Image (tube, rainbow, N blue to C red; front, top):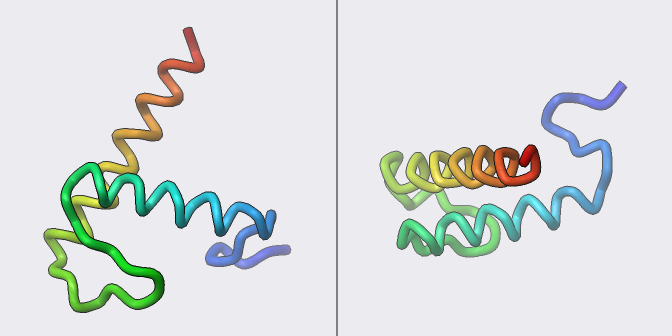
Amino acid sequence: MARSNQHVVPEAREAMDRFKMEAASEVGVNLKQGYNGDNTSKQNGSVGGQMVKNMIKRYEESAK
């Protein structure tokens, strides 16, 4: 069984990274590849929040 922090589909890692960068761009947070611990919690939280908003929007659009 895969651990919760590992992707079952290796290609999913790349897709999630692109999705994260897209969300960061939308909220004006400058993310770089790799470590981003020098960003504030507020910045990183806004990226995660935008990702959730985008996921909900995509789900709602697909359910129509």
